[in-house]
Length: 160
Image 1: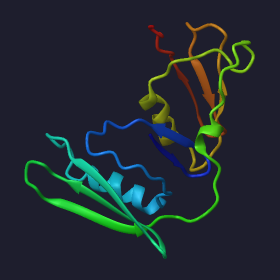
Image 2 (image 1 turned 120 degrees about the horizontal axis):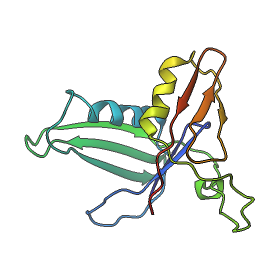
Image 3 (image 1 turned 30 degrees about the vertical axis):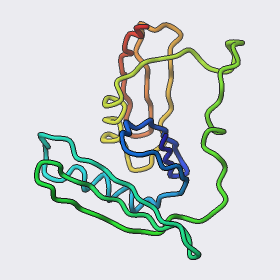
């Protein structure tokens, strides 16, 4: 499981990992995450998958990270090294609420296309907050409203 945060949002993802298991925990600097995202998307469309390798070494001076992006077809690799962040941060799992089953912990569940929501950022002034007005009926669109713009996004049907 990989967690990432920038203090305003938290993302958690499960990765498909096939290598030898090596347990550890560290805080990766934002600069390294930015480098990984930028390097992995070099050269418009990639016809094959690139491999991401994260290695870490712990010594008396802290934890040292190395990120490598490898192109399996050509064997070429790009790498970046940084020290892990130091600090006392709460576990991310604690931030995700658990549904209590009483129906009051969460508002109704809505399904939206993430790229539609991401496109909202193109309409807004940088950092402008957005108010979200979700209808009680799943058939109706959700209204996103800011000072400079507004948008309606139709909900996707939830199939189980």
